[in-house]
Image 1 (cartoon, rainbow, N blue to C red):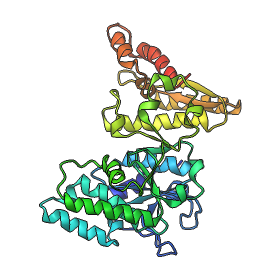
Image 2: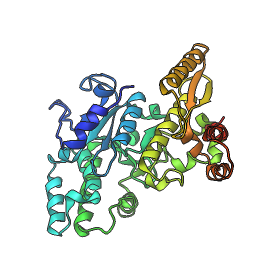
Image 3: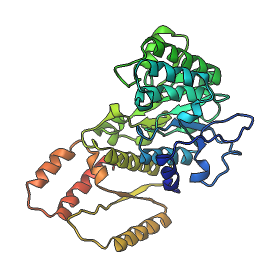
Length: 358
């Protein structure tokens, strides 16, 4: 799996407008498939999954996790941005509306949340729109065309984290969204979690609902850890690691993104590899001195030997222990001892293996 660091640097410092050729689709957005897998995105028959990226509100690391995971699951991840919306007359109308009401749209999360719908409404054929924190589980179930015959569908109940629909339904949904914005052009909250429920109350015929998303609150608890992960997730298209799913041990974005990446790798090892999983634990403490290169070589050798024997090797670390509900209590007790960091890690590894489901 190739990294996206070169791409991330581009989108971090440049506002871009990239149209993937004025082909029969008139398609907008940046496909990351040719960057991740060196595959020709123009000729790819893989289904497209879209995300809307705005530098000041999204992280490069989460974009990388999102794109890598969907590409590996057999999708073509496409990034949309505000410039993709300029072909729609709704863009200028909405921008001017907010500006006239002394509301700076360029700095508004509310403005950009609405723009993602504008971006989808101009894509011929419509498609899928995903939040960056929505990552694939059993996504193969939904690759054969849009569900519900292209009807506008919210796959996370009333949360707009994963949406699908054909272009006609995207246009209708977006036009109504813009109309409501004109009635209240200077919102107090930048959140749009109430948008789908409000839309459904006013136009119940417009949206279909499904529960294809597994929230992080359901995968970061002891019940899930002790369950058969593959059975629990087999009917779910994706997992959601959103702000509403915050856990007490992952308050910082960088820690949260590392946890998400590690959990997704663990899920793939357990449910996608088709082999039994063998674990080891490795985490370097700042207070310890290790030959990192030597340790890395030892881990690679360990992985190679177990793979040849028919197993799926997986390296757990402190992030896995942090996912355990009892981490705070165990950590507090360890801090009262005179154990070295290394010996404390020896205890924390048991939390990690427990959090991994054994």
